[in-house]
Length: 140
Ligand code: CMP
Image (cartoon, rainbow, N blue to C red):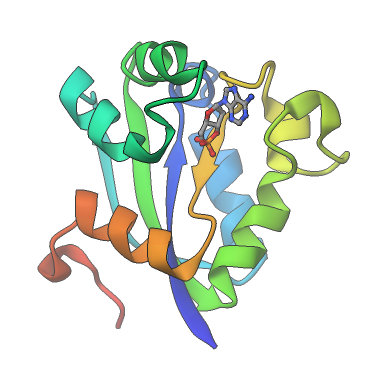
């Protein structure tokens, strides 16, 4: 099934100047970038985006990290895009991520872990709508 997923290149990877290298991973795996925007998130936007984690002990650090610099936000489209993107990213903790995955190759810590990707169809729909109006998605 062709799916869409929401991807974020986090402040650590933007600062390391590896947006292009990460985009190449997506493209080489057959995922198409159908919308993109570079943004400095406000605290309220970051808190709203990560609302499901609001009671977790790492929430405050996660939000501060996500607003520490610009992020690159994109919609990826392709066959099994949600799972494919999660395979490309690797484990949430870069220390546990397999060699060749984005987090293994570009990330340092569980907060500064280079990329975010939606984990299921329902979250993908919510996360895409959070950042992109339907008109900003260029599927064809
Ligand atoms: P992300 O995919 O953006 O979703 C939530 C983020 O919280 C996650 O990546 C990590 O960067 C961060 N995080 C920090 N600590 C943890 C933890 N113990 N478990 C899961 N996510 C964590």
